[in-house]
Image (cartoon, rainbow, N blue to C red; front, top):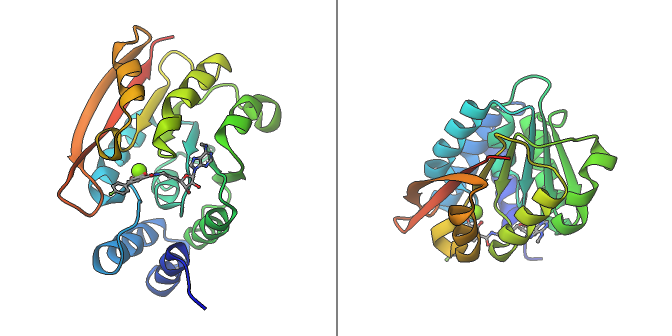
Length: 214
Ligand SMILES: CNc1ncnc2c1ncn2[C@@H]1O[C@H](/C=C/CNC(=O)c2cc(-c3ccc(F)cc3)cc(O)c2O)[C@@H](O)[C@H]1O
Ligand SMILES: [Mg+2]
């Protein structure tokens, strides 16, 4: 029977990466996507920008919207300080199942909590279910038309504090026009565009980093 792309990506990790070595998991996925099949991971070029933002923020609490196969989840978690917590939301059960195995292979199960379900349902429950007051860093990489509504929801739920950083993938390709228009014109954010390329291609894309001003 036919395998899925996430299943083939996991097989590549289990074949080429070293258990407990997150960077080798990242490398194995990038190699698979360059040599075998394109997949919508943030990739290595934008991934380096992601790494620099994570290192700069040095977050104690991170929220990721859209786990997919946990490439960026593992990439972020590998840079977190010892007691930091990363919560990642994924509503496709098949993708979540693959992501859990990638996270386990990387040995990051104690830093990452994968929550299965839609962001719209879970964002309002972050305080009561996970004891999270605010997020120091949010990585947006889910459906592109959900970046704006979920950002407004995070504001309403008081999950952002002065200095919280939002980092959004794909603001050029596929593009998130309503989110960009809002975040770049809102007096409550200071935004910066990091120009790059769509993962594994020469097409322009970039990350938008926005600091919440309170
Ligand atoms: C809406 N709330 C949600 N709550 C929880 N999980 C959600 C979710 N929305 C989507 N998801 C999950 O996130 C993942 C979706 C990611 C969407 N990403 C993209 O569409 C995307 C697409 C491209 C892309 C770019 C060019 C192209 F030609 C084709 C694709 C590149 C990227 O980097 C992307 O991130 C899936 O695993 C989905 O099940
Ligand atoms: Mg993306």
